[in-house]
Length: 365
Image (cartoon, rainbow, N blue to C red; front, side, top):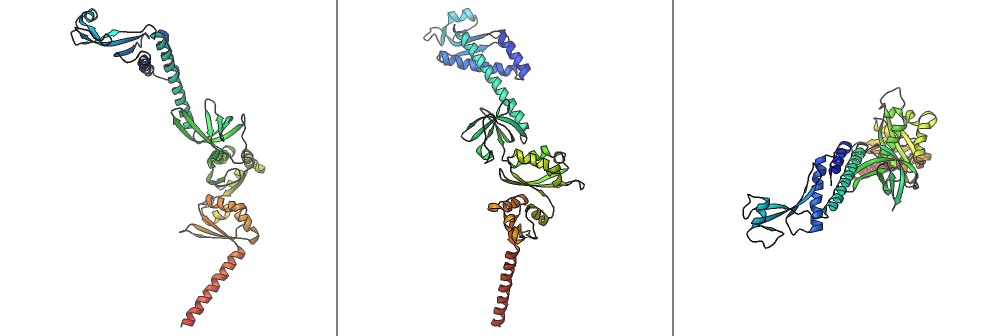
């Protein structure tokens, strides 16, 4: 241990921002632990680290007595007075007891402490960097795949993409470059965990913000997103400027903007819906591409009863109910879809029941 170590601590403080005294305190603590580990705890010893010169010495605390029974813990008055002329019986004095090979152990220990502190500082910087980027899209390279979890290289660290964050019909390979959305950053004892997703609804939102200048500038707003990743999504948009078509802005010239997003998502279908403050119009728009004849809403129950042409019933409901399900999720309304024929038959049943009730009342009279 020497002045070289002290200079290294000063350089680390300047370059990495780790306070020199924090490193010194860590080294002192580690040296005491190393001494006890290698030389036992049978004597009251402590390690002193000179923060100016870098020298390391071990001092043993001993009690001054007339007669010495345990030399590790006791010292005769005669020996003590040679070191401390003013000492008295029963005093506690410190005597240097640095082992001959402790210098090598001390150097290794100090090196390990500095490396550990540098790692901690690096982890802290990475955590703070990606915490600020939470909610953004990042581009990385797949480093490895373990038990359906994909690890994406993001420079100095890795992003973790769990199976639930993957698009179900995508295939991932090591070395593949992908885009993903940072939805959570956790700080752990082993370093930051950065969770990324390609199935998150906000991944779709950020893709539109990157692709559509009107959304990025705030002229067109995304009001709601309903997504079944890898299959189909619906996105409701609204223009703050009457001169700008919200849906047309997202579609882009010759459909180029939305096509770029569809390509990024591996062919996922995207319905771009015009948001409307009128819930009836909004629900009607949300059931696109189906044509809607009429929408009747019950505000208290928040149920929308929708009538569609007979030949468009299956289109309105969608495969396995997907279109209706996404429309309900997008609008926040429970959607009950019926064809014209079903609606008329239902009305006929109600009318028939009403006639029967009238006849019953007249017969009772």
